[in-house]
Image 1 (cartoon, rainbow, N blue to C red):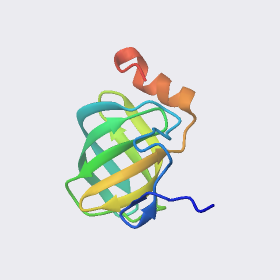
Image 2: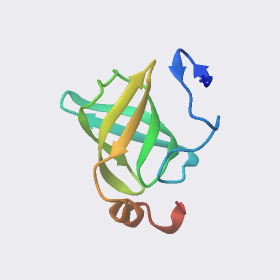
Image 3: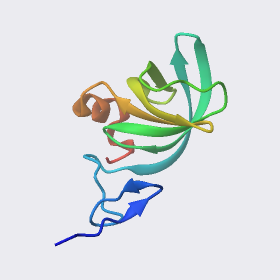
Length: 112
């Protein structure tokens, strides 16, 4: 018996389209911040945030995947992260710090 596999952008799609595979719930935000890299800081806007990472729109240079950066949110503090993907001025960051540390830094302002 042959099964059909749905494809999205040339890749095999999960069985349930739209199924959330992330470990942590994301919250849409629009916060100004900066990404600090080896080559210096770059202003950015945080588009969404979770205990596991963030999606940001960088206003400066693009940062390559796998680079360790610091996401600095003036009202909360600094969070260490790794760039997971980078496309057209947007980046996906995975936090290196433990989720309980992220929750402590962000505090009760944003229930994640």
